[in-house]
Image 1 (cartoon, rainbow, N blue to C red):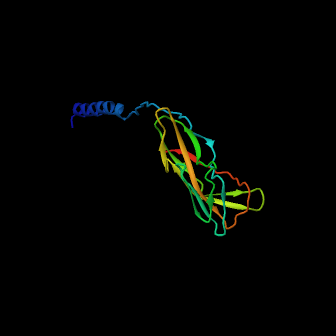
Image 2: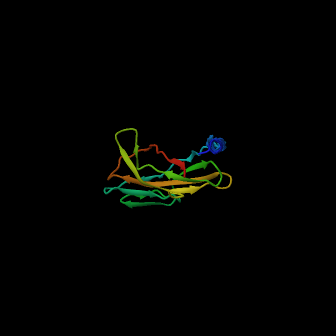
Image 3: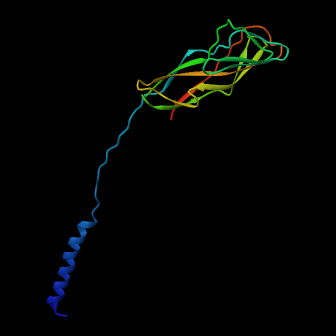
Length: 169
């Protein structure tokens, strides 16, 4: 092989190396990072649940307080129609038009401050399991339940507390 051809090939390979070498250098790019801190969803109790006045007979029974405020009794429980009764009412606020879930208790024990107890079960809300805040970011939720009354339930004023949990979807 001729020396000048050899030199030409070496020069060609070197030139190729210089051309290819810049293609293997790392590249850098930037991207944005965004975050939105949202308003917390809040709940406050406007009114508690009130089953009203009633009497318990020898069979016991239940009083159902619907989320719409309708109250009915079963068994030997008699309602005093003149007494005030109502579902619990809660004020919800947060991001306008957002949807949320309603978490209700399984049961709540009521006590007369002594040895007598009653249980509230079958809680239900309006709206049901989820709701949507209006364009101002607010909504009202009502909650009802079933008060289970024993046979010849002890006289007195009974009370307890319940927890309602609200979470964004």
